[in-house]
Length: 176
Image (cartoon, rainbow, N blue to C red; front, side):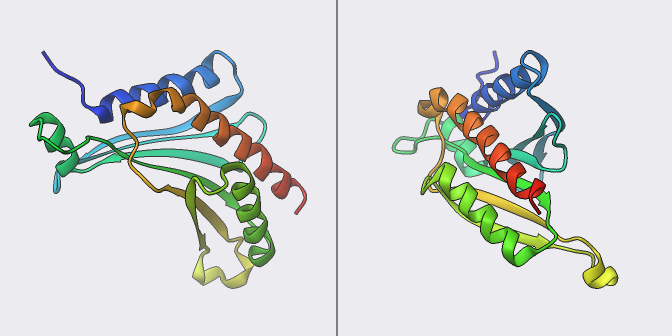
């Protein structure tokens, strides 16, 4: 019998929470889903991307990762090692004034998440188009510790904070 890992259990919990918002409450639309096993290093990664209905230009992505070391420690029941996963929540949107808008994005996300995670923003644009292309930003929340099954009850709140963040970011996007 297959015994699911912490990664599997957390992945299913996130899927249930997000797909209920998509299918039952119809508050969001899931736009992408990836479940990957990297054969080179035997790590696992799960990504679920979605947006608020009516606002597809701002998307959130929940990313759950587990390394071979973390998975092996759990499967082999190594003493003194608590199995867990890395969690990253990111937001993807286009900006017209990167300097001004990225600062607003940071402020909005810190208002919602406070110091629960470190924020990192990455700007991207097509070099050949020069400044004529609209840059996009990826604002990532990097959590300070691994997530374990002990945080299973927090998943609903994490998804709720993610929705609240999408709403706050929509304000910036509309008021460009």
